[in-house]
Length: 445
Image (cartoon, rainbow, N blue to C red; front, side, top):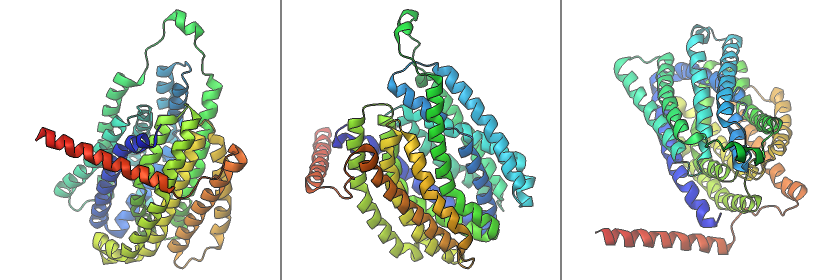
C-alpha cells in the first residue's frame, strides 16, 4: 500500500470520525445541560456499566473472523457469526445484571431491566459494527457510525421537546431505539456482503482450513488485550465511582469524554490500517504503520497544546461556569489521548500481523504500576491525579511499544517525525489532488 493510498483509505473514515466527534460533542453538551451534575453522573454510571459489560462480553470474535477470512483459510463463516452473536448476547446480559447489582446506587437498581436490555442491544450492535471492518473501503462502517450519531442527536431533540424535564432513563431509552435501527441496517449488510459463497465440494476438499483452536486462540489474545485496555480506560472511573461522589464522577467522565475529541485522526487511521492488513502481507503493513505514526504524532501533540491554551474558555462556553473544575483534568487527558492513539497505531503492526499476544503483554506491563499507585493518590483534587495516572500509562505503553521493534521484530525504532522527502511527497500529493479537483470543476462548468 503506497503512501498515497494510506491517506486515501483513511480519509473518508477521518471525515466520518470528525463528523461523529462533532455530533458526539453536541450530544454531550446537550445532555449535560439537560441533566445537570447529578443526572449526568447517573447517566455516566449507567453507560459505564454498559460499556464495561459489552467490552467484557464481546470476546473479540469479530476480529478473529476478519483476520482468518483475510488469510484465505476456509471455515464455516455463517455458523461462526451466529454462534458468536449468541455468546455475546448472553454474556453481556449476565455481566450487566451483575454490574448493576453490585453498584451501591439504588437509583440504578430501579432501572436494571432498562440498563440490561440496552447493554445487550449495544453489544450486538458493536459486534456487527466490528464485522463491517471486513469491507476495506469501510463505507458501511462509516455510514452506520455517522447515522448513529445523527439518530442519537435527533432522539435527544425529540426527548427535549416531549419530555421536559428530561430524566437520564429517557436518554437511555432513546439511545436504545437508535441502536435497534442500526442493528437492522447491519443485518441487511450482512445478508448482502458478509458471507462468501460456499466452495464446490471438489474444491472444498483441497482448501486449507482454519483450525477452530487457532481462531479461538486469536480471539482470546485479542480479547485479553482488549480487557487490559479496558482496565486502563476504566480503572480511574471505577475507582472514582467508589471513593468520590456521583457529582465528582460526572465531572471527571465529562472531562474524559470531551478529551476524546482529539483522538479522531488516530481512530480513523488505526481502523483503516487493521481493516486493510489483517491477515495479509506484513511488509506493506510495517511501512504503512510507520508512515502513519510519523505523520500524526507531532501534529496531534501540537493540537493538544493549542487545545490546552483554549480549554478554560471552551469548557465554560460549552458547559457553563458550573463545570470550570473540569478544565485541568481535560487538559491532561487530551495529551493522554494523543499518546494512547499513537501507541495504538504502532500496535497495529502486531494486531494485524497475527501477534496480538505481544500487545496483551505490553498492556499488562503498563497497567501494573498504575494499579499499585492508586491507593497512594491524594483524595483532594483526585480527578487531576487520576488524569495524571492515565497520562503515565500512555507514556509507558509508548515506550514499551517502541522497544518491541528492536527486541521483538529486530527492526529499528520507528522515527518520531517524517523526513523532508516524505513531507515533500505529501505536499506534492495534496497539490496534485487539488489540481485534479480544480480542473474537474472547470470541465464540468
